[in-house]
Amino acid sequence: MKMVSIVGMAGAGKSEVARLFEENGFTRIRFGDVTDEEVKKRGLELNEANERDVRERLREELGMAAYAKLNLPRINAALKSSDVVIDGLYSWEEYLFLKNHYGEGFCVAAVWASPKTRYSRLTERQARPLTLDEAAGRDKAEIEHLNKGGPIAVADFIMINESSMENMRETAKKIIFEIKNGKKNDQIRH
Image (tube, rainbow, N blue to C red; front, side, top):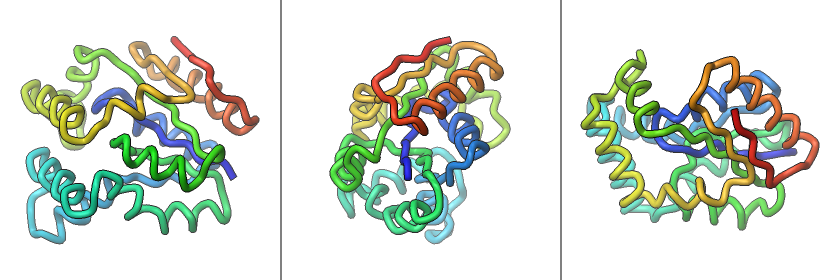
């Protein structure tokens, strides 16, 4: 079975790309579900401040690979019957944990968009919209506290998402085809 993690900064289009993988037969595992469950368990409102606090506390308590470790049973169960796409791998340590655990069976596809494009998307999205200050603050926190840059930098596939949804879909389909056929180290742009 194949396993790919979709990485990128908030608003780049990771969840949209992960949904496309799901539409093409991959089981989608969203690391952020752990955050949502923990926020609710603590009786807090789902918002950027509480989510950030929970993400950082979980990593403080369990180490920077916390989300990979917490999701390992879900990943292993899904891999028994299908390919897997991970939506939400953030830290370098999560990347290393999964790479060490799955080896060549694990690859990374990065979705990149400029801050201007991402912030526009984040302020306009229906679910959990962010203000410009919240979006910039999230970037800073994820880079400085969650070691998010590493997995993006070493991605096996890179998709530039500055264009239309249709272009993104076409690019994602090419990546899906290449992953299913065992290719790596390609940059796919649109």
